[in-house]
Length: 120
Ligand SMILES: Cc1cc2nc3c(=O)[nH]c(=O)nc-3n(C[C@H](O)[C@H](O)[C@H](O)COP(=O)(O)OP(=O)(O)OC[C@H]3O[C@@H](n4cnc5c(N)ncnc54)[C@H](O)[C@@H]3O)c2cc1C
Image 1 (cartoon, rainbow, N blue to C red):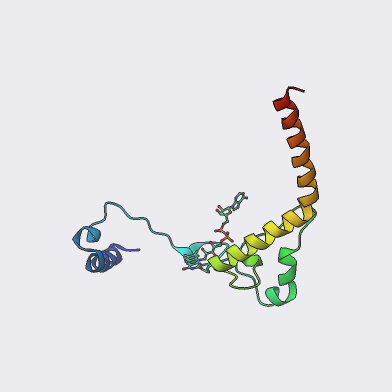
Image 2 (spheres, rainbow, N blue to C red):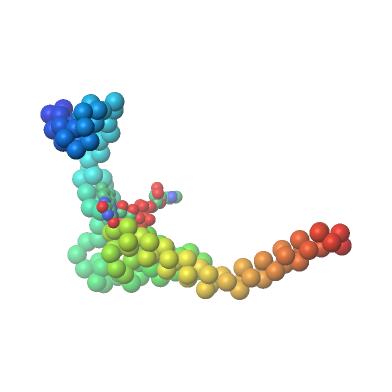
């Protein structure tokens, strides 16, 4: 952003929020189009045919690794809604895959704690 752009933005902020907003103490600017991985897009950029050809593979677990992230969503990929959907799905996958082991571990810890409490 150039200085003249700062003045334009400041004037806009001042119009909406009042005079103090037009005189910022500091500001931070980011050129999103300069991002090497997203190239200005909201999310990771896949080339033509990647979604339709390989999209499903983005969310297939690999052993105990489960993938979340908006790029793996089935709806609203690239947006916060997609991020939430993918996180919910990945969490459910982990519970389904690891649930029995987690339940067994929790049971063992509960028994251990009960022994400590009872002095046994
Ligand atoms: C400029 C811009 C404007 C946007 N505006 C909107 C909007 O108005 N509405 C909307 O719905 N969406 C918007 N989005 C999109 C939205 O921000 C994303 O879709 C969402 O944040 C993706 O969430 P995520 O959890 O998938 O990934 P992220 O939010 O990117 O989270 C991934 C996290 O993983 C961390 N990480 C990366 N690598 C590693 C590593 N190796 N080890 C540990 N941690 C790591 C990162 O630091 C990051 O915190 C915008 C995006 C941009 C860039």
